[in-house]
Image 1 (cartoon, one colour):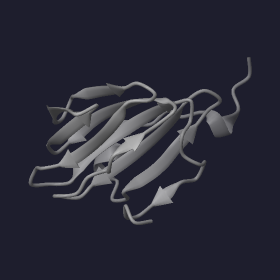
Image 2: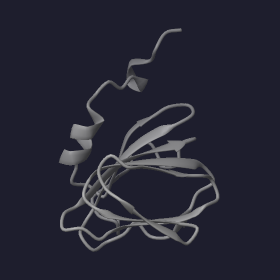
Image 3: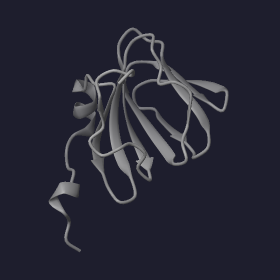
Length: 121
């Protein structure tokens, strides 16, 4: 099977995530999944959401809270949170620095090329 060069990704996702200053940035979208990096400012949150797709979030820098179906838990570097399709969820930055993470949606959730400098975008 030949790999389409536009769908090939081989980069250090941790470095991309740490240096990212955008609220949300789509990195690569395939037929069955998508990689998005995020930076949540101090004191802010993603906001309550429910997706029809599974979501995996990996936290790279900062500290915060995961709220999944009203259950609150801490998140910080090296933590992975799995949010199944249909689960109510939110993530809050309650640390002293930006909360940096990457997330994988399966299947894709965001439009290809999504680039939101701020949450309000």
